Length: 101
Image (tube, rainbow, N blue to C red; front, side, top):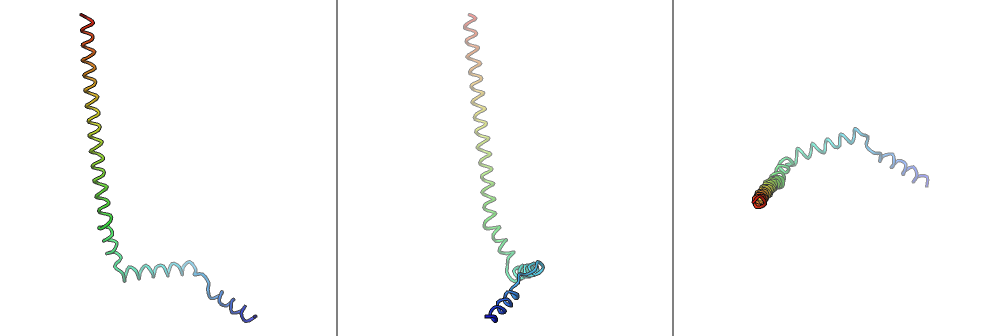
């Protein structure tokens, strides 16, 4: 039993967490190996062209259509208000002429 305890203690001693500088070194080596030996930039470039460009295109088309609809609806509303204003003025003018006569 005493032998197992020392073996366990030795195993725990061997399995220590990495210090901060060890984590930085292992991470840096990992990033270096991935960038050096995989076509990561080409993959990111393909992702940009295949996914992001169509999303930006659709967003731009959405902005164009939204602006067009807003412009048309504002123009239509202004036109209707102007027509109503002119009709009201003519009706009021006709009532005034009739009352004066």
